[in-house]
Amino acid sequence: MRRKRGGRFKWFIVLVLFVAGAYWAVSELLPSWEHADPDWKGKFDKPIFVAGEVMDLPALDSGEGLKLPFSVIQSEIDPNVRYEEETKSVILTTQRKLVLMKADDMNGKINNKPVQLLFAPVEKEGNLYLPAYLLKELYGIEVHEDTVSGTVLVYRAGETIRMAQVHSTSRRKDATVALRQSDSIHTPILAEMKPGEQLRILDETDNWYYVQLNNGYAGYVKKKNVALEEQIVVPPLEEQAVPPAKQKWQSKAVNLTWEAVYNVAPKPSSIGEMPGVNVVSPTWFSLVDGKGNVQSKADHAYVKWAHGRGMQVWGLFSNSFEPEITSESLSTFERRITTILQMLHYAKLYDLDGINIDYENVYTKDGANLTQFMRELWPLAQEQGLVVSIDVTPKSNSEMWSAFLDRRALAKVTDYLIVMAYDEHWAASPVAGSVASLPWVRSSMTRIIDEDDVPPSKLILGIPLYMRVWTETVEEGATKVKSKAIGMKKAQEIIKEKSLKPEFSEETGQNYVEYRENGVLQRIWLEDKDSLARRVELAKSLQLGGIATWNRSFASSDAWDVLSRIAE
Image 1: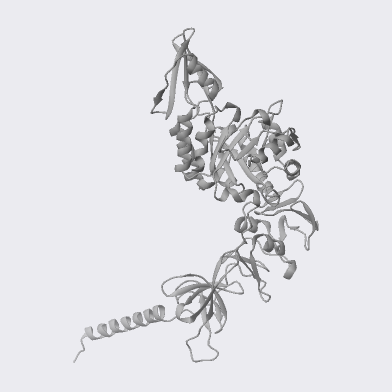
Image 2: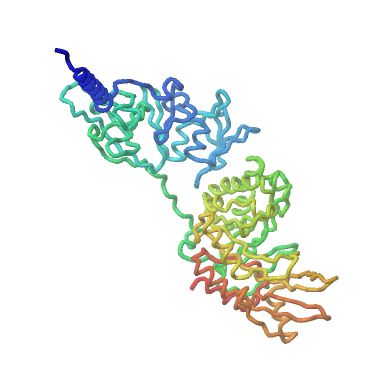
C-alpha cells in the first residue's frame, strides 16, 4: 500500500516551524553574551568625562598635579576663559576673581596680586592644560580620579548626582550584573559589575537606568539590578556679600544724572538743588591712546559736594569715541589691565562710588574684547566696592553704535546697563522727528529684556533732557532738514517768546509745537514735564532699576520734581 506524500510535507512544515520557533526564542528571549569595549577604550590613558560624555582630549598627570585641557574648560565649565597666543596668557574671570597665568610659568596673578602657583599651565602637542586644583577653587568643580583606570570624572558646581549600587537578584555569590551598550538584553555587554559596585545614574528609560561607573564605563542596567542611594549635590559657588556702595540699590531705584564736563569743571555752588537725584556721573575720564592710558579731569570738590548731599558719584569713563585707539587698547590683556588699574586708582583717589563705562563708535570686531574688558574690570571693581555700569544703545544694525554690544553678556558682568534711549532722530537725520518717542523707547527697552534675557532690574532708562529744533526747507521740490539741540529751559523760552500752544501728539506721546521764522518752518517735539512723567511711569511699569538723564545742564528747574517720582 503506498503512503500519501502529504504526510511528509506536514512533518517538514512542523520541523520548519520548530526551528523558527527555537530561533525566535533564542534571539528574542535569551540575552546576548557578546562583550564589547566602549569606543574610547584604548584611545586615552586618562579619559575625561563630563555629564557622562567623553571629552576629545585626556587629562595630564595625576593627584594634586592633575591638569585639564583648556578646550574642555572652555566648552564645559566656562566659555569665557581666554588664551592670548602672542603673550601665552591664560585669563580666567569669575564674579570675584581675575586670574592671569602663563604657560610653563609658576608665577601668576590673582586680582593683580602676584601668586606662586603650585603647578603651572603646560603645553603638550599643541594643546594647553591648566592645573585642576586652581580650577576647583575658581569654579567649584569636583574632580574624581579613578586610580585604577586613570579615568577623570568632572562635575560642575551645583550639579546633582544620583548615587546607586549594583544589586544582584541571583543567589550565586559570584553572580555579576551586565552593563550593556543599550537598553536591550540583546546588545553587547560593556562590563560585568559586581554587587555593591558604585554607580552614578545619568538617565533612565522604562525599565533601565543609564549609569556610569567610577572607571568611566557608561551603559544600561536593568532597574531591578540597581539599589538607589542618596542624591549628592556639588556645593554651588558661595554668594558674595554685597559691597556697601551697592546695598542701597537693592531696594531703591537709581535716579542718576550725567554731569557733562568739558574744558572747565562746573562749580558745585552754581548747580542748585536736584531733589530726588541720588547719583551723579561726571564725564571726567577718557581713553587717550592705544596703550590704554586714561586722562582725568576729576575734582575733589565736586565729590565732596555730592557726598554732602547724599549722592553717590559714578565717574564716567569714555573711549573718546575714537575707534582706532579703542581697538588697540582692547586688543591685549596688558593694555586692558592698564586701563582698568588706572581707573581703579582714580576711583580710590577721588573716593568714587562707581564707574560708568561709555564706549561708543566701536568696530563690531572689537565687541568681544570690550566684553572681555568688562569681565576683567568686574572682579577688581567688586573687590574695591564699586558700582559698575555700562552705557548701551537701543538695538539696531548700526555697526559702530550698536552691533558691537553684547548686551546679554555685559549684563552678567555689570550692576547696570544704562540704555541711552534717545536719538531716534539724530542730529543729521534725513527726516525731522522726536529724539525719543515713547513707543520707540518702550520697544527699545522691551527688546533688550525679551531678546537678551536681561533682568529689568539691571536696566536703567536713559532719558534725554534735550530736544531738537528742526528747520525744514523745500529745495527743488524736496524737503531738506537740519537741526540744532536745545535744552528744556531754552524750549520754554521759545514757547513763551512766540506765544506757542503745545499740542499733544498721540504718535510720539509728547507735546509738539511748530512755528515759522523768517518764513521757514521750525518743528520741536518737546521734552517737558509731561514727557518726563510718561518716561518715569514707563520705567516703573517695566520694573526697571531706575532712570538716568542726559544731561544735568539741559534740565529745567521743574524737571527734578517730576523725575523724583521714580522713587514713589
